[in-house]
Image 1: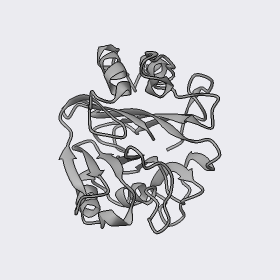
Image 2: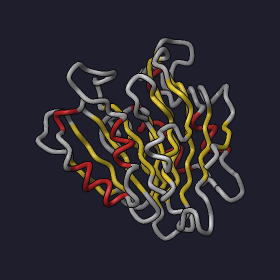
Image 3: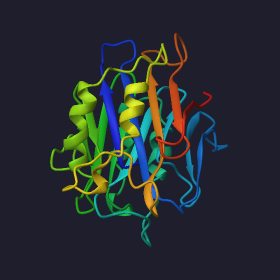
Image 4: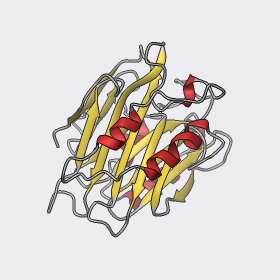
Length: 250
């Protein structure tokens, strides 16, 4: 997952809404989101068939997790654990706060550098492992709309954030109850980029190359998951300009 959009509204009926595109080598095998782990029946996530973990998922308690590579760390490395395991570790917990406490105790040297988002109806965080630090760093996400890629939260030096963060902030807000997602879906599918920044500044990257956007996600978490309302999980099984968003069964 190379781009994550987070709309965090602590007092809203739908406090957490995220959208994102996964950018990856197209020959890396994966399976669309589902309940793929017999020892984790409460987890719904995409399955990375190479590493055994995931890039994005939710659990039945409303905890949501997304992992991204830090800049310059694409792919596995001999002697390092798969970063996809971090999703499963996060989703073993019933609260985002508990999950982040456990994740901060991990050995950062066991993984290549990563950014990790963890949120639920009452809190939202991102964690950073720069690959050179002695610990995993934890940051709270303030209310509002934010973007995270391979560097820092809302980092305007990242061309994609500089171009698309204002567009998402100016766009209409999704309405999960009415199924109104079209503005975010359109932005996630956008291949527009300034020529001086190159094609990797697009939201939907290089649809014909060996590396690019391989799938897209939209998730909405209600205030009381599983009681008043269920979360919403939409998934595009391929680049979102050519593939429709369909509902994942929860």
